[in-house]
Each structure stands twice: as structure tokens, then as C-alpha cells.
Image (cartoon, rainbow, N blue to C red; front, side):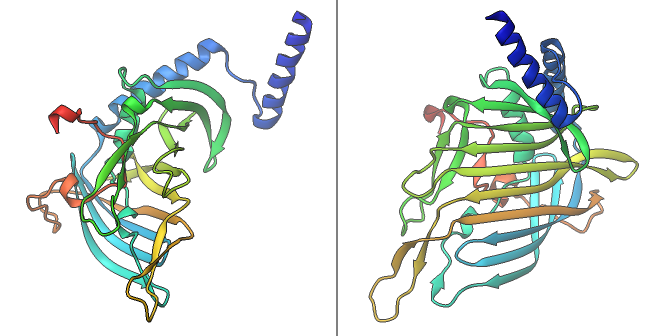
Length: 294
């Protein structure tokens, strides 16, 4: 029996070596790597600079909307200035999914803090070696329980201005640089959110090294948000009320580019707005407020 198990483990190890050019790390090596990644993740937000950049967002759903914005980030504040917008709206379709089309840049920090916070209770396991944008990475799987899950924004009733948030557990993969242990990608999947409207939600957050001034930082590079099912409203001529049909789903992609250092002399002004009033994130990994504190 032992020889059979040993042979099976050897076969698995050989397969991993063939795929990625090296054997799976030992348990001690996995734990050491995970500890380094955890330390990086929990300190990530503290080392970020104040900066401005351009964010280009493309939303595909009942319409195709491309937006180019100037983004300024200073601490926990982020401000957006729309530069250009291009809409391609099909005839007789009224867009109703616009509010689902963004992810706050603050979520790039919040998701790392949530997964690795000691009280979250996330379960992490070694997954594999891989490569990401040409760099060798270590991949770990994770699962976050609902008690410490992500807040997903819903627009409640179709004709209501009220918004509601549901809290859902999620799972996914973390890709960390094999040498520095810097997190370069977080993939999250929420399986059971709002089943009457969606067939799960997938969000991928990508990070990359960016030189600002004389220093290099790991900053947001791109996000991909997929809502596999979204309702759209079809305005039907000759009828009193619009027809609600199942749409093709909603896909939002954003890329961050042209980073520059932000200073008090910058032409971009903050006003009194903070990140929460300036942008409504479709999925939030920040602190969950208990019901009695709301």
C-alpha cells in the first residue's frame, strides 16, 4: 500500500516538474513562502505613494462604453476626472447596468488585507508554480468564509434608487513573485451571489512594478470583472412598459497607465470628497460594519 502511495506521489511530483521545470516545494518551503507573502500583503497599503495616472475602462453589456479618466490617489482618497467617454448603445436599448461598472483602486489594497488578516479565517493552500507576464510566480489557493466575505452591491428593485449590499464568501488564487514575494495577481470567484440575477461573479486584480520618481512600486495594473448574467431593459415601441430580458452578461476591463508622482502643486484638486463618495465599488473587500453599528 505504501509503495503504491509513494509511486502516486512521485508521479504527481514528476508531472509538476515537467510542467513548470521544478518540483513542488517542501511543506516547510511552502510555509516560509506563504509567511513572506503574508507579510508583504499586510504591509502593502503602508508603502504606497501619492500618484496620478490614467485609467481606461471598457464596459461591455447592453452597450459598449469606453471611459478615459485621470485618477489621483493620495492615502485613502481617490479622485476621478473624466477625460473622454465613448458609448455604443444598440437601438431601443436603455442601459441599466452602468452602476456595476467599476472597482475602486482601494480594493487592490483591501483584498490583500482581508485575505491575510489574522481574524479572517481564510484557508490557503499551495497550488502550483507558474509564470505571469514572463515572471516566475508561486500560486496559492485561498477561501474566505462568508463571515468575512466581500460586499457585493446590488441595485435592489428595478425602479428603486435604494442600493443594497450582500456579503458573500469567496475563493480564488494568489500569484506572488517567486523572488520578492510581491503579489502580482489576485483572482476571486463569488459563486452564489444574487442567484436570481447572476451566475457568479469573477474579479481579477493585476499589479505591476512601476517607477515613479526614483523609486519602484507595485501598483494597480488592470482589473477584469465578469458578471455572467445581467438583466437589460428593452424599450418596445407601442407598449406601455419596457420588457425585461436576460442580457448577455456584463464585462468590465480597466487598465492603469501613465503614472506620475502627485504633489500639492498638481493641477488635480480633491475638494472634500473621499474615496467612498467619489467612487462606488461594485465589490468591496474593506471592513464589514456589524449591523448594530450601521
